[in-house]
Image (cartoon, rainbow, N blue to C red; front, side, top):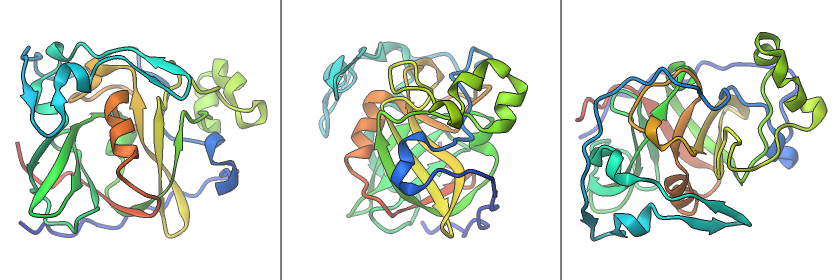
Amino acid sequence: MTTTSSPLLTRRRFLGTAAVGAASIAVSACSTVSRGNYIGTAPQPVVDVDPAFGSYAMMYGPMFDEGYEIPGVPFQKVDKRFYRQIVQDPTGERPGTVVVDTSNHFLYLVRENGQAIRYGVGLGRAGFEWSGRAVIQWKRKWPKWTPPAEMIKRDPKLEKYSAANGGMEPGLLNPLGARALYIFQGGEDTLYRVHGSPEWFSIGKSVSSGCVRLMNQDIIDLYDRVPNKTPILVTGGLGVA
């Protein structure tokens, strides 16, 4: 099925965008780890196996990565729809394209033979602010996080993480998690991020802050599958359940 082209991303200019060479401390519109106000259906406990990836216990188990110990996800408490899985591609996009379906809280990586890898995502306010086509300009493992000036103005406690102070160091509590994909359009940083999160309970839900978040185990998997300059489409129009 071929989707209708989404409008181009609204370009959002800002001062002080970090240079590509200093990407790990780029300013982000994605807000801090949220503190609640979760919206969504009750989780559906299951124990099952996806043949493409092995057991869910292995897929979402604890892991060591780049010197960090990532806790396992209690996947039985997450709705099975939001597990990483192979599905028939509903996007009609070319293989290699990333598609974020904000209406259903899914992210697709389109593959050959009419298939896609589907991941569940959580969306914050920034995750709904625009839609359109762009590219994953670059990506980082265990990135630093730097709140934009307007966020610091609203919450002065974040000043210690400002660009002038070097940003928040990588780690399990960093809002960008284990990986971050930085989205650009026309050579400009949109401030839009696809990133990891320890808050597995926010996957499949709309929360009070952030961009597009995946469980850390899933963002690591996605990171390894997409190179820089991968095309990405953000849309609310797929209409699939």
